[in-house]
Amino acid sequence: MIVSDIGARAKKVMHAVVSEYLATGEAVGSETVAHRYRLAVSPATVRSVMGELEDQGMLRHLHTSAGRIPTDRGLRYYVDTLLRVRSLSVPEQEEIRERLGPASDPQEIMQRVSRVLRDLSHLAVVVQAPRPDSDAVSHLEFVRLRDDQLLAVIASHSGQIQNKLIPVDAALSPSDLDRVNNYLNGLVSGLTLDQMRSRLVREIEKERERSARDPVLAQALKLAMAATPASEPGGDILLDGQSNLLAAAADLDRARRVLRTLEEKDQIVKLLERTLSAQGICVFIGAEANLADLTEVSVVAASYGGEDRPLGTIGVIGPSRMSYCKVIPLVDFTADVITEVLARP
Image (cartoon, rainbow, N blue to C red; front, top):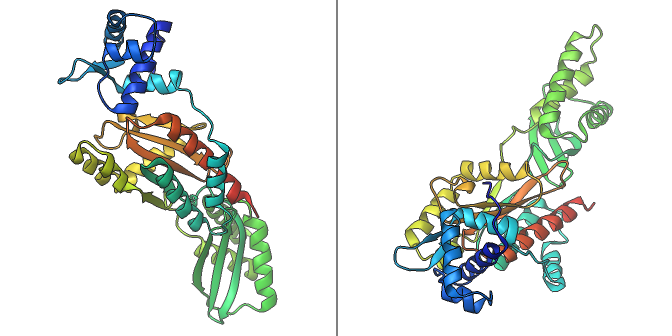
């Protein structure tokens, strides 16, 4: 949403109205703005500026009050232009680092992330585990269980381990199994699962076209294809803190609609995909979040894992009247810490 710039006085009034609204949840009157925020202008002047801001779609009247509240358009302007985001304090940063690490299991890390964001934001939290289509393979190995069965072990750079039992028609000797593992690791190491699948398909075609086929390598490719898990768009999604929405909601019916929408994974995945393709922190206000027909809901989200290959997304979901100056640095810093933790050997 593109919002044209406004004058210096209008910026001060807009900042005061939004700050007061976010703090109290109440419609804001000109008397409050003029006196509490010391703008050195009369309430009449403030009323005139607020009227201009309403004409521009930045503020709106409530039916039951002479005061005004910001529209989604006004909140977007506030977040993009007027908001002063502070860095987390050193104790806050140390608490997050301590609660997130050390941990070797990505699933455990994601559980910790959801608890940290839930406890510190007091809002609902969505955490996307490292996506299979973004997470690179670090190691592939077949381990013999029986003559007719192998265990495929696929490890990713983020630390995720996937195991799968693979039946085999003919037993491989220990030396052939070593050759299979060495060949496949050289072939797929560093590739995502989607890239790995494509590479295997190409190699299988090449092997079929060779006049002198190597039966061990042909079997290696067949085993690798059988071991490669199906790509699941979006990866695992963890939701937490939904009760916080009910506790803070003035409209319980709206809060329940939010909760029902959050249970629809497809809606959440679409939102997270938008975050993955964006640079830096993302703030979706009201209809921008595109969560069914929900309004008055905002999402603050950030990707983790590095800009070149983001692995997943974390986000906080709450009323559009959330404390953006608190939530934005919280989500941003937490995403950076996840990136650091997953990068540790």
